[in-house]
Image: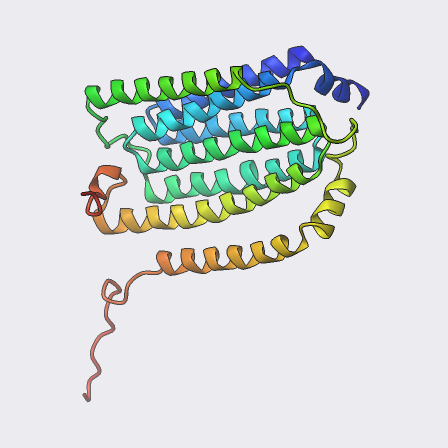
Length: 109
Length: 175
């Protein structure tokens, strides 16, 4: 326990910011790069989780428990989003027999 | 401890890249699970034990299993979807890299952060989070249950088959 709390005091907050920005960029890259809807959903999860980690890091460095509660709420919203997203995916597979995101372009200008 | 931080970070970044670039969706899901376990390690390093346990249960226990089940039941593992055109892929990499550069440059300009509260190692413990959750954030906590149940109902309605696509019962004899 003592070692863990000293880890917070040794590692600068900038390193957490850098790590989370990297993960967020990877998620963004996944959304732009792939056509498989399930991988796009996973990239969204990755982005949400990088933000979660950053909020938790700020909360730990500022000693403010509100940040931990925010992370908890973001997890709730992410779980709801995944449930709805996967059911949309199942419906898409059933209707057009593919999970290619480019087939869903009717709302595109 | 510092070594552990960089080890976990490297694992997270590499497995995140595997999520994006691996061919079959099953490999993507498995790398994402590795990434999330490393993230639970990060939460433990931050002394947020409640978040570490909830993260393990919710993400690696529930959400990723849901992904795996969908891939398995819909038989999505065959890579039948074509790649984007190479032009679009180059544009995606350039856009992601530029976003990364902009964010790094922005964090370079941040001013020094002064904590509002004196340092305490206890804020991530279950008792402290519970106090914050059930005193200050009681109303949002209850409202989130409404959000959750509406999402579940929506998912069920989406998942239900249409009446037309169901096999019709045979017509009755006398009618």
